[in-house]
Length: 209
Picture: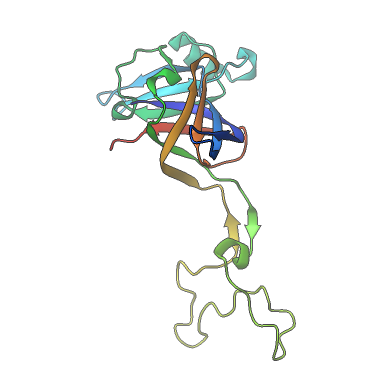
């Protein structure tokens, strides 16, 4: 049981013991280090702040340089927080977090930000079927149709499905299985897909069930 921060490398296909093809996602989970230990008496809650990767010190701001220097670790690319219960172990400031806290076959939840699609219409965003193409309709095939009556209720209800920004949402995919762990390369291979594009950062947390 554990938790770690990782970078999505991409997807591939591997074969299991039955020689069946399995779609998998490869995640580079490390090197990670604890950059801050937050306590309820000081910050108001208990959490470990974890950083991933190694970055040149002159590429980050002065406050972040001091933050990493206080932890005694190399500056990273991304910071994320995990609850004490999610981490499943007691860690000190500057302690490494590795993929060895997981095991093959274990179920995990993966948290990430979905791909941003920009401004999208109702057919793409909400899977509308579109209007009919007969009886005088020539330019309304992809329109949303009526969104509210003019006399009653004389307004558009909150939550009405309309065109707008699509994607870039916080997504949690639960109960994914760890297919393979390559500790020497800090890689975790997970069955199925996880949120986000390539090179995005995701949180991997063991399920509590």
